[in-house]
Length: 267
Image 1 (cartoon, rainbow, N blue to C red):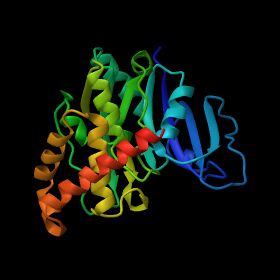
Image 2 (cartoon, helix red, strand yellow; image 1 turned 180 degrees about the horizontal axis):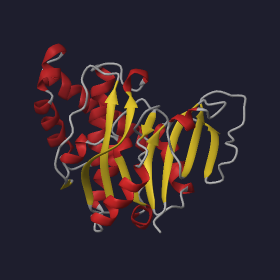
Image 3 (cartoon, rainbow, N blue to C red; image 1 turned 135 degrees about the horizontal axis):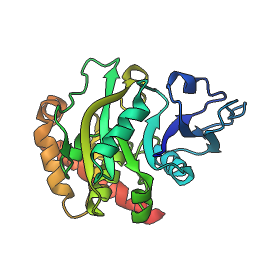
């Protein structure tokens, strides 16, 4: 029987009461990142299938990697603590992998609430490519653990929430999967809902945002990142032209590339 495990990233939780609201009734690894000393133990009574790890540090990508290294199930679900899953989420995911047996990764729908501009999801199933993965958010990602481990894939810890370059880690992860020859499929079935009203990673389309996007594109491909920058400006021109010129946005993204290289070389 196929086993499914949720890798939940959270922060500064003295108690894990939030976990019950997530509606997860199967295996899970919870990584509780502490940005300051927090009292309380990371224990969930009567749930032997749930493992919890608390550590002091920062960076969402680091939390995801810690959880991934502790995972044991066949199929892994990338999760945040503000996602509420549908009752039959395990059956949905299991059926999808039975239907698309060639898929190493399957991306689903996680609807957004608490935002004036809900995300629009595609309505037909398809294999993902290097451009379509840019539409995928981390909590929509599931994958066969064996495929990821065989290719030695991890989330890039230089980018992602909690870092100065705070977005794009999921795109870099998916890009690396495609480059490694894995098959990534999108299946338009809802597995959960997330409340964006409490989200803290995005504030506005400002300098840090554009620098982070540039860094993410470079993390994805050091060869074609300039093309990804240009396509981003074209796709997001309504946003871009509001406060900045196209040249200014391109310059900010280029500065993000420089910051990424500096952080990479410092490791």
